[in-house]
Length: 202
Image (cartoon, rainbow, N blue to C red; front, side, top):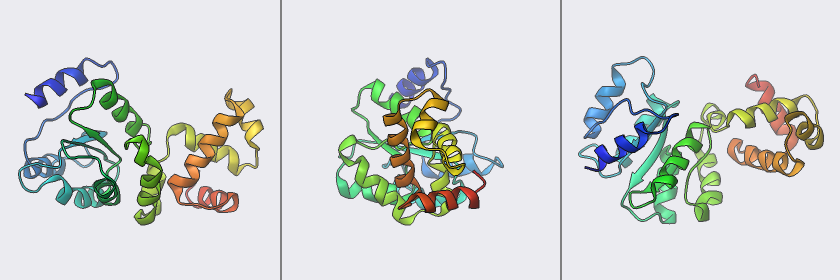
């Protein structure tokens, strides 16, 4: 019933489409294995699947399909320990099954943009947790299209004020993007950000 309800909700959205529904971890792996690239952009993953369960699957999914963005959907309480575990294992967000539909939709869209979607009170800690174990290629995937654009402009030597003018944003918004970029890429200063951008062709 939950799967059917979610499918109806998501297919009603003009920018979302359900392309698969799997009932076990084994079915999920088989579904992903038949295509050269993941057939979906975002995966809603239940922690309590028939074996292998969600926690067991996460590291394998991250290793074999790093471009697949995973949102955990679960009845489990979103405590710090659980969020740390799933973030370290490769999840991009967490939504309770009891959450409002709008919260779920917002989380899906945020993850699709390359952002994280963990509970606000745990988001800051999660950024650090994810950063502690991720490879550079995975870190790069965290950046949204807008954040990549800002990185490219920073690389050319532009200040936040000039970037704000070029992108028709406020200087505060650009500063917020810069702070999030540094967290997502595990970087400490502007010089390391510029070098990261050069190394990865941004």
